[in-house]
Image 1: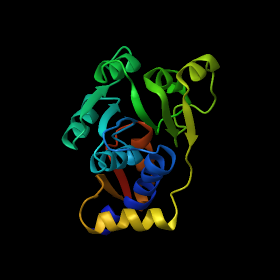
Image 2 (image 1 turned 120 degrees about the vertical axis):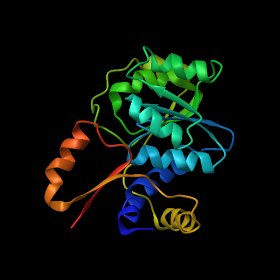
Image 3 (image 1 turned 135 degrees about the horizontal axis):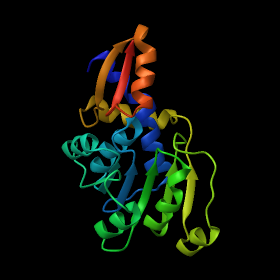
Image 4 (image 1 turned 180 degrees about the vertical axis):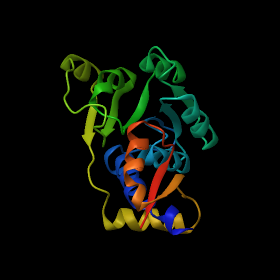
Length: 206
């Protein structure tokens, strides 16, 4: 593995592992909706879900990202730039039952949608706030769904790191590098991320 690819592992895979297992209590055979599945943490979660024997629904915001996550093995792909109702699309993909776990790397603007897409007693785990940090939601929706909501910050513990790196060393987890730029082009890197042009992870090299 190159240094550039290795650089994508800790923040993404340690966070995704913690979200899925330590907070989301993911079990084999369950269905996971991954919002922002073409991003760093989202793409890592997609790999882990597949490895765990669970079913993935990848939600992305463009046709190019939809093609990428399909190539990465997503079981169901929803392009929410083309879908009128993300929650309805998730319910349709799960025979009306909803997702057992939702991995939110986006932010609270979509939480009302996520709550509707969640199976009763399902788990919503969030690490993102790029699409909103303040929440306006009807608490009745959360109560009616008996939803479990978890925040997940940081990049995990030593046991998480050891488990993930063991799988990386076995070649079972790898990560996706969109492009590598020199550190001098950091401003361009930020522009690409802000414009949502990155699929996977962007790496800066000193």
